[in-house]
Structures are given as structure tokens and as C-alpha cells.
Length: 150
Image 1: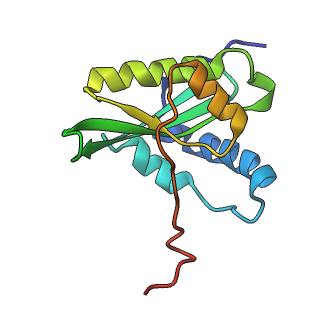
Image 2: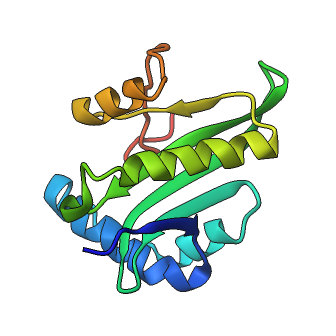
Image 3: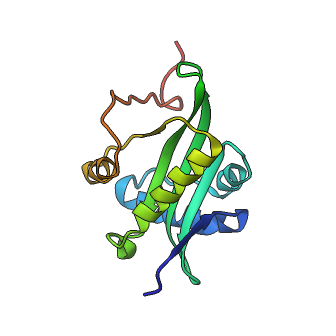
């Protein structure tokens, strides 16, 4: 098995990234199947987004999406690790770590002060804690599609 290398995603990767996310989400949320290609292209061209892929010559083995934002509380640029996914066959081979390491490097180069992440998966939380993330509060979500206007 060829070892994937980490690089910044391009708009040409949008279809493969979308397929990878769709395959994963079918298992977790089968009702949550949407077309992602256009939004992936938009994010890949937006300076406030960073999409990294771990790829071989044949396929994308992993993807990471980082979102940068100006934090008015801290008065600094911060970032949120929105998504990190590695295909099952490539897990436990250092690919998630390599994606995260590159994201941290690029966030530092951009001048970010903090990187935040949230997850509902305990194995993912263990992974992030292993690389220095600390538990810091609670993340709550309101679905604007499902919530009635009041």
C-alpha cells in the first residue's frame, strides 16, 4: 500500500472529497446525503478555509477541513478544525496525525492563536487529546433547518 502524502486540496479534488464524506456519512447518518462538490470548491478557494488531503496516486485516503475566523473575545485569529476523516483501510497508519500536524503548521504560519475541535466520537476525542487538545467547555448545536423561527 502506497503511503499517502499530505497536500493542500484543489478544486479538482472536490469530487473525491465529497465521495469520501458521503461514504462515511452513509454509515453514521444515512438520511444526511447531500451534494457537497460545489461547497468544497468554494471552501478550497476561500482564504479563510484550509482543506488538506492525504493522497496516493490513485485516491484520497484522508481529508481535513480547517476554518479560520477573527475571534472578538481573544482579539486574535483562531481556527476550528471542522472535519478530519481517514478512510478505514488507512487508519492507524499516522495519516490523521500527518494531516493534523500539517494543519497546525499552516495555522501557525497564518498567525492563528488557537485551534478548536469538537467531536461526538470518543475515539476521535482520545486522538485529539493525545496530540495536546484539552477539554474546554461544551459544544452545542442548533439546526437552523429544523428549528422554527420564533
